[in-house]
Figure 1: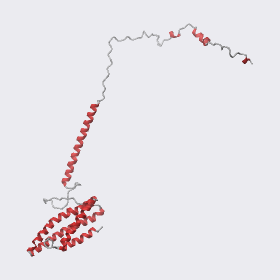
Figure 2: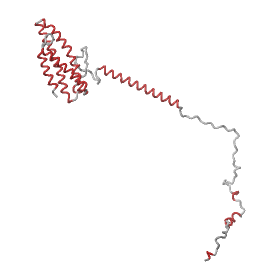
Figure 3: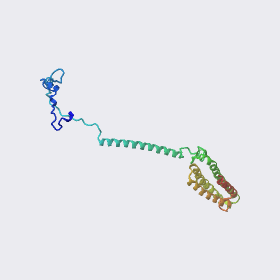
Figure 4: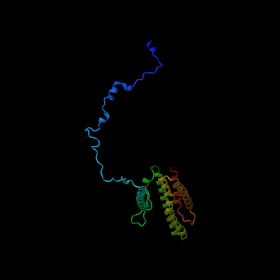
Length: 260
């Protein structure tokens, strides 16, 4: 009950923290601790160790110029580099053009020496085409392409036999001079034209699988067959007298087209 005897409404005891004995002992000792403290271990004062300032006048600070290149210099260097690269590319392009012209002068797109027609080296006319069935024609088309080539050769032989037949007739009768002259014309005209107009297109068609060359071959070859049919009839003054050879050529041509 003693706890309830005190008055809770009376002023609390004014406790002064500076009345603590440990605090009053330090404050009343009479020693100035702050003044006696020295940051220098040897006891020298700051004033005694001060270095006098130099009497020379101070110079203002000077900034060193930056070593980074300017945008103009960078653009000029880049432009010079591009010009140098362009010159190198132009030199390489000129070299490639020169090599391509050399290859074309040799006569073949692949850079190989022309080998057809197979003429002697001393002959003034040089080969005009490169032809190799085993190298340029796929394996599955080589047989058919060779048969068409043999058919063209048989066409040339037929035209030559026609010239001989007309010549024999001309020796027996001078009225057959027109047929003999036309037979020579057909031989000179149809031999190279048939090679260029229907054999060479079919060769390139098998080589590169070109639908245009196939179409061109069939169109010209059908026209060639129509002309051969007319010549095989043996119309007078048309320059054809060896009609049996023409019929054999026609008989040979159709099995070749239907062999595959």
